[in-house]
Image (cartoon, rainbow, N blue to C red; front, side):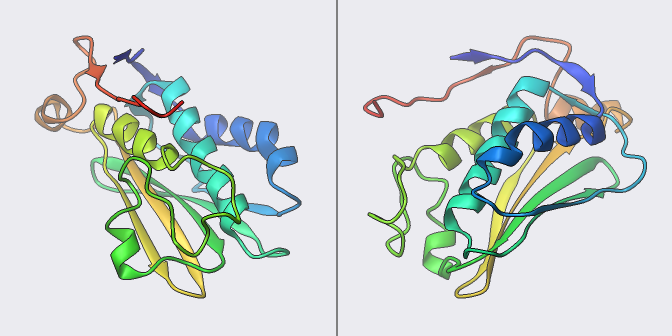
Length: 181
C-alpha cells in the first residue's frame, strides 16, 4: 500500500525539473516541451507525479525510433490539467492499447528488444487514479504513441475534487506488484 502526500503542485516547474534530471537517460533523443505559460496548480503528490512522468518518458525513449523527437505537452482543461508524452515509433495496435495498463503486459512487437517486466504502466495507472486522474493511450501503428494523464486542478469545484482525489484525508493506493521481482 502507498500513502499519498497531498499538496498544491505547480506542474510547469516540476516537469521542467524532471526533464533536466532525466535528459541523460533519454538515449540521445531530443525532448520538446509544449507548455502554456501559466498552468493552474493541481492537487497531487509531486513524488508520484514524478514517478508517472519518468515512467512515460523512459518508455518513450525505449520504444521510439532512433533520431526522433519525444514531446511532453500540457493542456489546461476546465477541471484538470492533462500531460501527454508522445514518441514516434512502431506504435501499438488497437488490441494492444486495451492491454498496456495490465500488469506484466508487453507489446509483442517489442518483447526481447526492450528490457522490462511490463509493470511500469500498470503502476502509473494506479498512481494516476489514486490522485483522481485518468490515463489513456492513443497510438497509430508505425507512426506514434501518446500516453495522456490528467490531474485535478486545485481551483476545480469542491464537489469534483471530493469525487476524485480527496486531499482532506489520507488516500491509500493499492498497487500490487506481487510476483514482479
